Length: 331
Ligand SMILES: NC(=O)C1=CN([C@@H]2O[C@H](COP(=O)(O)OP(=O)(O)OC[C@H]3O[C@@H](n4cnc5c(N)ncnc54)[C@H](O)[C@@H]3O)[C@@H](O)[C@H]2O)C=CC1
Ligand SMILES: NCC(=O)COP(=O)(O)O
Image (cartoon, rainbow, N blue to C red; front, side, top):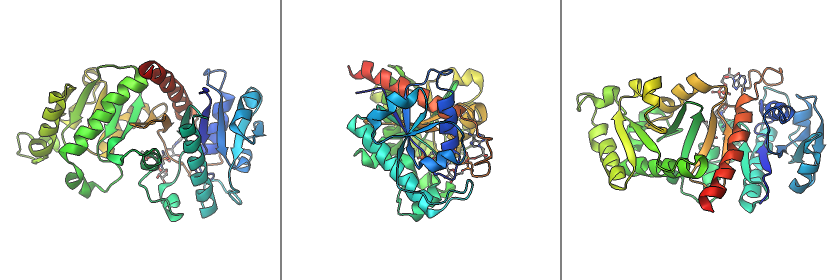
Protein backbone atom coordinates (compact mmCIF):
# COMPACT_ATOMS: atom_id res chain seq x y z
CA UNK A 1 0.00 0.00 0.00
CA UNK A 2 1.23 3.51 -0.84
CA UNK A 3 1.66 6.32 1.68
CA UNK A 4 -0.74 8.52 -0.29
CA UNK A 5 -3.44 10.27 1.77
CA UNK A 6 -6.99 11.05 0.62
CA UNK A 7 -8.59 14.24 1.97
CA UNK A 8 -12.33 14.74 1.53
CA UNK A 9 -13.05 18.44 1.14
CA UNK A 10 -16.07 18.60 3.45
CA UNK A 11 -18.77 21.19 2.80
CA UNK A 12 -17.69 23.24 -0.26
CA UNK A 13 -19.14 26.39 1.34
CA UNK A 14 -17.09 25.90 4.49
CA UNK A 15 -13.38 26.39 5.10
CA UNK A 16 -12.40 22.85 3.98
CA UNK A 17 -11.16 23.81 0.48
CA UNK A 18 -9.19 26.79 1.84
CA UNK A 19 -7.40 24.85 4.60
CA UNK A 20 -6.58 21.98 2.24
CA UNK A 21 -5.08 24.43 -0.26
CA UNK A 22 -3.11 26.15 2.50
CA UNK A 23 -1.92 22.76 3.79
CA UNK A 24 -0.62 21.89 0.33
CA UNK A 25 1.23 25.22 0.29
CA UNK A 26 2.86 24.23 3.60
CA UNK A 27 3.77 20.70 2.42
CA UNK A 28 7.55 21.22 2.42
CA UNK A 29 7.68 23.26 5.64
CA UNK A 30 5.83 20.48 7.50
CA UNK A 31 7.21 17.50 5.55
CA UNK A 32 3.72 16.36 4.57
CA UNK A 33 3.15 13.00 2.91
CA UNK A 34 1.74 13.34 -0.61
CA UNK A 35 -2.04 13.72 -0.62
CA UNK A 36 -4.91 14.44 -2.96
CA UNK A 37 -8.15 16.22 -2.26
CA UNK A 38 -11.58 14.88 -3.18
CA UNK A 39 -14.12 17.57 -3.98
CA UNK A 40 -15.37 20.07 -6.52
CA UNK A 41 -12.30 21.77 -8.10
CA UNK A 42 -14.29 25.03 -8.46
CA UNK A 43 -14.81 25.18 -4.70
CA UNK A 44 -11.02 25.23 -4.31
CA UNK A 45 -10.43 27.74 -7.10
CA UNK A 46 -13.06 30.07 -5.62
CA UNK A 47 -11.25 30.54 -2.31
CA UNK A 48 -7.62 29.68 -3.00
CA UNK A 49 -5.38 31.01 -5.76
CA UNK A 50 -2.78 28.21 -5.75
CA UNK A 51 -2.27 25.70 -8.59
CA UNK A 52 -4.74 22.82 -8.93
CA UNK A 53 -4.30 19.62 -10.95
CA UNK A 54 -7.58 17.87 -11.68
CA UNK A 55 -6.79 14.15 -11.67
CA UNK A 56 -8.68 11.15 -13.10
CA UNK A 57 -7.39 8.62 -10.62
CA UNK A 58 -5.51 8.71 -7.27
CA UNK A 59 -2.46 7.11 -8.88
CA UNK A 60 -1.97 10.37 -10.86
CA UNK A 61 -1.61 12.39 -7.64
CA UNK A 62 2.08 11.78 -6.75
CA UNK A 63 3.28 13.06 -10.13
CA UNK A 64 1.47 16.38 -9.59
CA UNK A 65 1.94 16.85 -5.84
CA UNK A 66 5.22 18.79 -6.08
CA UNK A 67 3.71 21.46 -8.34
CA UNK A 68 -0.05 21.54 -7.77
CA UNK A 69 -2.77 20.40 -5.40
CA UNK A 70 -4.19 17.19 -6.93
CA UNK A 71 -8.01 17.20 -6.84
CA UNK A 72 -10.12 14.15 -7.66
CA UNK A 73 -13.44 15.64 -8.77
CA UNK A 74 -16.86 14.64 -7.47
CA UNK A 75 -20.32 15.65 -8.66
CA UNK A 76 -20.82 19.29 -9.44
CA UNK A 77 -21.66 21.29 -6.32
CA UNK A 78 -23.45 24.01 -8.30
CA UNK A 79 -22.67 27.65 -7.54
CA UNK A 80 -20.62 27.70 -4.35
CA UNK A 81 -21.07 30.76 -2.16
CA UNK A 82 -18.63 30.57 0.76
CA UNK A 83 -20.50 30.72 4.03
CA UNK A 84 -23.82 29.77 2.45
CA UNK A 85 -24.24 26.00 2.45
CA UNK A 86 -26.85 24.40 0.21
CA UNK A 87 -28.09 20.96 -0.71
CA UNK A 88 -25.90 20.58 -3.82
CA UNK A 89 -22.89 21.27 -1.63
CA UNK A 90 -24.06 18.74 0.95
CA UNK A 91 -24.39 16.06 -1.77
CA UNK A 92 -20.91 16.91 -2.98
CA UNK A 93 -19.52 16.64 0.59
CA UNK A 94 -21.20 13.28 1.06
CA UNK A 95 -19.88 11.90 -2.21
CA UNK A 96 -16.35 13.03 -1.33
CA UNK A 97 -16.62 11.32 2.06
CA UNK A 98 -17.92 8.10 0.49
CA UNK A 99 -15.18 8.08 -2.14
CA UNK A 100 -12.45 8.76 0.40
CA UNK A 101 -13.60 5.99 2.72
CA UNK A 102 -13.83 3.61 -0.23
CA UNK A 103 -10.31 4.45 -1.39
CA UNK A 104 -8.90 3.99 2.12
CA UNK A 105 -10.73 0.67 2.53
CA UNK A 106 -9.40 -0.51 -0.83
CA UNK A 107 -5.84 0.43 0.18
CA UNK A 108 -5.56 2.97 -2.68
CA UNK A 109 -5.07 5.62 0.02
CA UNK A 110 -3.23 4.84 3.25
CA UNK A 111 -5.69 6.94 5.27
CA UNK A 112 -8.59 9.32 4.96
CA UNK A 113 -8.47 12.82 6.40
CA UNK A 114 -11.96 14.28 6.41
CA UNK A 115 -12.69 17.95 5.90
CA UNK A 116 -15.43 19.51 8.02
CA UNK A 117 -19.05 18.85 7.11
CA UNK A 118 -22.20 20.44 8.44
CA UNK A 119 -24.09 17.66 10.17
CA UNK A 120 -27.45 19.37 9.72
CA UNK A 121 -26.84 19.99 5.98
CA UNK A 122 -25.82 16.39 5.38
CA UNK A 123 -28.84 15.11 7.24
CA UNK A 124 -31.02 17.10 4.79
CA UNK A 125 -29.68 14.94 1.93
CA UNK A 126 -30.33 11.63 3.63
CA UNK A 127 -27.24 11.20 5.82
CA UNK A 128 -28.70 9.29 8.75
CA UNK A 129 -25.76 9.49 11.16
CA UNK A 130 -24.82 11.78 14.06
CA UNK A 131 -21.48 12.54 12.37
CA UNK A 132 -18.76 11.27 10.06
CA UNK A 133 -17.43 8.99 12.82
CA UNK A 134 -20.52 6.77 12.85
CA UNK A 135 -20.83 6.85 9.05
CA UNK A 136 -17.25 5.62 8.62
CA UNK A 137 -17.69 2.98 11.34
CA UNK A 138 -20.70 1.55 9.51
CA UNK A 139 -18.95 1.71 6.13
CA UNK A 140 -16.13 -0.33 7.69
CA UNK A 141 -18.51 -2.83 9.27
CA UNK A 142 -17.74 -1.78 12.85
CA UNK A 143 -20.55 -1.25 15.37
CA UNK A 144 -20.66 2.39 16.46
CA UNK A 145 -20.26 1.56 20.17
CA UNK A 146 -16.94 -0.14 19.35
CA UNK A 147 -15.27 2.97 17.94
CA UNK A 148 -14.03 5.92 19.96
CA UNK A 149 -13.80 9.57 18.93
CA UNK A 150 -10.35 10.69 20.03
CA UNK A 151 -9.44 14.38 20.16
CA UNK A 152 -5.68 14.55 20.50
CA UNK A 153 -3.53 17.60 21.20
CA UNK A 154 0.13 17.83 22.20
CA UNK A 155 -0.58 17.67 25.95
CA UNK A 156 -4.01 16.05 26.17
CA UNK A 157 -5.96 13.22 24.51
CA UNK A 158 -9.66 12.82 25.27
CA UNK A 159 -12.46 10.45 24.26
CA UNK A 160 -16.12 11.34 24.86
CA UNK A 161 -18.08 8.22 25.89
CA UNK A 162 -21.43 9.62 24.78
CA UNK A 163 -21.08 11.94 21.80
CA UNK A 164 -23.65 13.86 19.78
CA UNK A 165 -26.74 13.64 21.95
CA UNK A 166 -28.59 16.18 24.05
CA UNK A 167 -27.23 16.67 27.56
CA UNK A 168 -30.53 15.49 29.08
CA UNK A 169 -30.08 12.13 27.34
CA UNK A 170 -26.60 11.49 28.72
CA UNK A 171 -27.39 9.65 31.99
CA UNK A 172 -29.70 7.17 30.25
CA UNK A 173 -27.22 6.62 27.43
CA UNK A 174 -24.39 5.68 29.79
CA UNK A 175 -23.91 1.99 30.50
CA UNK A 176 -21.19 -0.30 31.79
CA UNK A 177 -20.89 -1.88 28.33
CA UNK A 178 -20.56 1.46 26.55
CA UNK A 179 -17.81 2.66 28.89
CA UNK A 180 -15.96 -0.66 28.65
CA UNK A 181 -16.23 -0.73 24.84
CA UNK A 182 -14.99 2.84 24.42
CA UNK A 183 -12.13 2.19 26.84
CA UNK A 184 -11.07 -0.97 24.98
CA UNK A 185 -11.12 0.95 21.68
CA UNK A 186 -9.14 3.78 23.28
CA UNK A 187 -6.51 1.45 24.75
CA UNK A 188 -6.03 -0.52 21.55
CA UNK A 189 -6.03 2.71 19.57
CA UNK A 190 -3.19 4.12 21.68
CA UNK A 191 -1.08 1.07 20.87
CA UNK A 192 -1.93 0.81 17.16
CA UNK A 193 -1.82 4.48 16.23
CA UNK A 194 0.58 6.02 18.74
CA UNK A 195 2.87 3.16 19.79
CA UNK A 196 1.78 3.43 23.44
CA UNK A 197 1.70 -0.27 24.35
CA UNK A 198 0.33 -0.05 27.92
CA UNK A 199 -1.68 3.15 27.97
CA UNK A 200 -2.80 4.74 31.22
CA UNK A 201 -6.52 5.50 31.02
CA UNK A 202 -8.31 8.05 33.20
CA UNK A 203 -12.12 7.97 33.41
CA UNK A 204 -14.10 10.96 34.61
CA UNK A 205 -17.12 10.99 36.85
CA UNK A 206 -20.40 12.35 35.54
CA UNK A 207 -21.47 14.43 38.52
CA UNK A 208 -19.74 17.23 40.45
CA UNK A 209 -16.91 15.80 42.60
CA UNK A 210 -17.51 12.44 40.88
CA UNK A 211 -20.72 12.20 42.89
CA UNK A 212 -19.09 12.77 46.31
CA UNK A 213 -19.94 9.27 47.60
CA UNK A 214 -23.42 9.32 46.11
CA UNK A 215 -24.49 12.62 47.60
CA UNK A 216 -24.59 14.22 44.13
CA UNK A 217 -25.74 11.44 41.82
CA UNK A 218 -25.66 7.67 41.56
CA UNK A 219 -24.10 7.08 38.10
CA UNK A 220 -20.60 6.70 39.53
CA UNK A 221 -21.59 3.87 41.87
CA UNK A 222 -24.06 2.20 39.52
CA UNK A 223 -22.29 2.49 36.15
CA UNK A 224 -18.84 4.05 36.14
CA UNK A 225 -17.17 2.20 39.03
CA UNK A 226 -18.43 -1.21 37.86
CA UNK A 227 -17.09 -0.41 34.36
CA UNK A 228 -13.71 0.55 35.83
CA UNK A 229 -13.66 -2.66 37.90
CA UNK A 230 -14.34 -4.70 34.77
CA UNK A 231 -11.60 -2.92 32.82
CA UNK A 232 -9.10 -3.51 35.64
CA UNK A 233 -10.06 -7.17 35.73
CA UNK A 234 -9.24 -7.28 31.99
CA UNK A 235 -5.78 -5.89 32.78
CA UNK A 236 -6.20 -2.23 31.79
CA UNK A 237 -4.45 0.51 33.75
CA UNK A 238 -7.38 2.73 34.72
CA UNK A 239 -7.76 5.62 37.17
CA UNK A 240 -11.16 6.96 38.17
CA UNK A 241 -13.80 8.02 38.44
CA UNK A 242 -11.99 11.35 38.59
CA UNK A 243 -13.75 14.65 39.31
CA UNK A 244 -13.85 16.33 35.89
CA UNK A 245 -12.98 19.77 37.23
CA UNK A 246 -9.58 18.68 38.55
CA UNK A 247 -8.38 16.12 35.98
CA UNK A 248 -7.16 18.52 33.30
CA UNK A 249 -4.56 20.71 35.02
CA UNK A 250 -0.97 20.10 33.93
CA UNK A 251 0.12 17.80 36.78
CA UNK A 252 -3.05 15.72 36.45
CA UNK A 253 -2.64 15.39 32.67
CA UNK A 254 0.84 13.97 33.17
CA UNK A 255 -0.65 10.96 34.99
CA UNK A 256 -2.56 9.49 32.01
CA UNK A 257 -2.27 8.94 28.26
CA UNK A 258 -5.94 9.34 27.43
CA UNK A 259 -8.94 10.64 29.37
CA UNK A 260 -12.39 9.14 28.79
CA UNK A 261 -15.16 11.58 29.64
CA UNK A 262 -18.84 10.94 30.05
CA UNK A 263 -20.16 13.46 27.51
CA UNK A 264 -19.08 15.57 24.53
CA UNK A 265 -18.33 18.92 26.15
CA UNK A 266 -16.68 17.42 29.25
CA UNK A 267 -14.05 16.02 26.85
CA UNK A 268 -13.87 18.63 24.09
CA UNK A 269 -13.83 21.83 26.14
CA UNK A 270 -10.45 21.14 27.76
CA UNK A 271 -8.76 19.93 24.57
CA UNK A 272 -10.07 22.83 22.47
CA UNK A 273 -9.22 25.36 25.21
CA UNK A 274 -5.65 24.06 25.29
CA UNK A 275 -5.10 23.06 21.66
CA UNK A 276 -7.73 24.51 19.31
CA UNK A 277 -5.02 25.25 16.73
CA UNK A 278 -3.43 21.85 16.57
CA UNK A 279 -5.68 19.18 18.05
CA UNK A 280 -6.83 16.37 15.77
CA UNK A 281 -9.95 14.22 15.69
CA UNK A 282 -9.12 10.54 15.08
CA UNK A 283 -11.54 7.62 15.00
CA UNK A 284 -10.19 4.67 17.00
CA UNK A 285 -11.39 1.12 16.37
CA UNK A 286 -11.50 1.23 12.56
CA UNK A 287 -9.60 -1.00 10.13
CA UNK A 288 -8.52 2.20 8.32
CA UNK A 289 -6.81 5.35 9.57
CA UNK A 290 -9.19 8.33 9.77
CA UNK A 291 -8.31 11.77 11.07
CA UNK A 292 -9.93 15.18 10.80
CA UNK A 293 -9.21 18.69 12.03
CA UNK A 294 -10.75 19.43 15.44
CA UNK A 295 -12.95 22.25 14.14
CA UNK A 296 -16.06 22.57 12.03
CA UNK A 297 -17.06 24.30 8.80
CA UNK A 298 -16.53 27.84 10.20
CA UNK A 299 -19.10 29.29 7.75
CA UNK A 300 -18.62 32.69 9.45
CA UNK A 301 -15.12 33.07 7.99
CA UNK A 302 -15.38 30.95 4.80
CA UNK A 303 -14.02 32.67 1.70
CA UNK A 304 -12.33 35.43 3.72
CA UNK A 305 -8.81 33.98 3.73
CA UNK A 306 -8.89 33.91 7.53
CA UNK A 307 -8.96 30.14 8.12
CA UNK A 308 -5.94 28.61 9.80
CA UNK A 309 -4.76 25.31 8.27
CA UNK A 310 -2.87 24.28 11.41
CA UNK A 311 -5.36 21.66 12.66
CA UNK A 312 -5.67 20.22 9.13
CA UNK A 313 -1.87 20.05 8.88
CA UNK A 314 -1.78 18.29 12.28
CA UNK A 315 -4.48 15.88 11.02
CA UNK A 316 -2.42 15.05 7.91
CA UNK A 317 0.71 14.51 10.01
CA UNK A 318 -1.13 12.36 12.56
CA UNK A 319 -2.67 10.20 9.82
CA UNK A 320 0.75 9.52 8.31
CA UNK A 321 2.29 8.76 11.71
CA UNK A 322 -0.60 6.44 12.63
CA UNK A 323 -0.23 4.58 9.34
CA UNK A 324 3.48 4.06 10.12
CA UNK A 325 2.72 2.93 13.70
CA UNK A 326 0.15 0.44 12.43
CA UNK A 327 2.70 -1.14 10.10
CA UNK A 328 4.94 -1.75 13.12
CA UNK A 329 2.07 -2.86 15.40
CA UNK A 330 0.47 -5.19 12.89
CA UNK A 331 3.73 -6.44 11.39
N1 LIG B 1 -15.46 17.02 11.97
C1 LIG B 1 -16.44 17.80 11.51
O1 LIG B 1 -16.84 17.66 10.37
C2 LIG B 1 -17.03 18.83 12.40
C3 LIG B 1 -18.11 19.53 11.94
N2 LIG B 1 -18.70 20.50 12.72
C4 LIG B 1 -19.80 21.22 12.11
O2 LIG B 1 -19.37 22.55 11.83
C5 LIG B 1 -20.49 23.43 11.88
C6 LIG B 1 -20.12 24.69 12.63
O3 LIG B 1 -19.81 24.33 13.98
P1 LIG B 1 -19.29 25.37 15.07
O4 LIG B 1 -19.75 24.87 16.38
O5 LIG B 1 -19.63 26.76 14.65
O6 LIG B 1 -17.73 25.18 15.11
P2 LIG B 1 -16.56 25.69 14.15
O7 LIG B 1 -15.35 24.94 14.57
O8 LIG B 1 -16.95 25.58 12.73
O9 LIG B 1 -16.36 27.25 14.49
C7 LIG B 1 -16.19 27.72 15.81
C8 LIG B 1 -15.42 29.05 15.78
O10 LIG B 1 -14.05 28.78 15.50
C9 LIG B 1 -13.64 29.46 14.31
N3 LIG B 1 -12.77 28.55 13.55
C10 LIG B 1 -13.02 27.24 13.31
N4 LIG B 1 -12.04 26.73 12.58
C11 LIG B 1 -11.16 27.70 12.35
C12 LIG B 1 -9.92 27.76 11.63
N5 LIG B 1 -9.38 26.69 11.00
N6 LIG B 1 -9.28 28.95 11.57
C13 LIG B 1 -9.79 30.04 12.19
N7 LIG B 1 -10.95 30.03 12.90
C14 LIG B 1 -11.62 28.87 12.97
C15 LIG B 1 -14.91 29.80 13.56
O11 LIG B 1 -14.73 30.92 12.71
C16 LIG B 1 -15.90 30.01 14.69
O12 LIG B 1 -15.80 31.33 15.14
C17 LIG B 1 -21.65 22.63 12.49
O13 LIG B 1 -22.55 22.32 11.44
C18 LIG B 1 -21.01 21.35 12.99
O14 LIG B 1 -21.85 20.24 12.80
C19 LIG B 1 -18.22 20.81 13.96
C20 LIG B 1 -17.14 20.15 14.48
C21 LIG B 1 -16.47 19.09 13.73
N1 LIG C 1 -17.44 17.76 17.93
C1 LIG C 1 -16.68 16.79 17.20
C2 LIG C 1 -17.31 16.49 15.93
O1 LIG C 1 -18.33 17.07 15.60
C3 LIG C 1 -16.71 15.48 15.07
O2 LIG C 1 -17.69 14.87 14.31
P1 LIG C 1 -17.39 13.75 13.24
O3 LIG C 1 -15.94 13.57 13.12
O4 LIG C 1 -18.07 12.52 13.76
O5 LIG C 1 -18.05 14.23 11.99
